[in-house]
Length: 377
Image 1 (cartoon, rainbow, N blue to C red):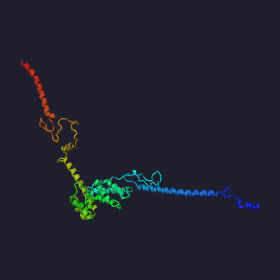
Image 2 (cartoon, rainbow, N blue to C red):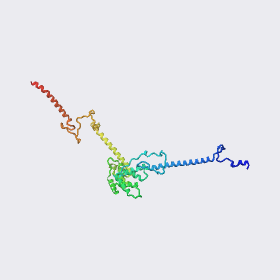
Image 3 (spheres, rainbow, N blue to C red):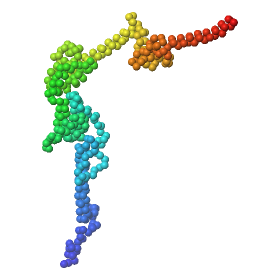
């Protein structure tokens, strides 16, 4: 082997892993170890990014589960699986539930009548609708609604639940049905509703809308769905002047119950306005004489009627004498001296004047006696 062969032999060439100071295109060469290290760092960076993405998804899922597993009574989240605890950011991604506005508490149901039941049912449904996250199932709804029923109704529901089979679960529909049954048997409720529909009439200060609100529970009790029959019941319960205006307008012109309600409310408001005007006109006419001038006596009576009971027209000072003394029956007491009403004997002017005159007479008679004696002597 020649010297040139030895110099060109690969065994004498520099090792691959040894650092090389030569450059290609002006850039330094990287060794295999550096390349492997760069690849490993890239892999670790990618794994870290994927891990961060998974943690963000886990945080979002935990927040969703917390909103679904919040107890409506305690307002605290139910404990999650303790075997796999997950740590997440201290700053919540959603607003705290303590800052959310709470709906108004439902009406308490005591099985008085159908209106009592409908008010309780409507308030509960409204509460569920405004807080859907707090009531994901019927069990939560039942637990909440039981807080707003009477003790007798709670006992009825407890007996019903104890009689269920293990496979059966209590439902919100069953709970409402049991609360409605507390009003009595369906047939008895229906008879009572029919009798009330025949007798119900509009009260003097009741608006047609309030009357209609009182008729709706009765229709629900008898399961009346005919719009024409509902219109007939409503019209027959209205006051006679309103029915007359409806007849003049023509009952056939009204196509819905809402149109009858709107027209009846308009007539009722106009009637109220006319009555108020007549009342004001009557009061104004009482204040005038036949010639159109104001009657001072009438105005004085009004001022006297509106005067405070503690006020006094004489300089604002109260007078202890001649007040209106009354007994326990609020009747004017009679003076035992002058026999006049409105004061006592201790405050009687007649008695006080008589006593003054008697004292004056006695004093004068005492002065005259010595003079008369001297004259005689």
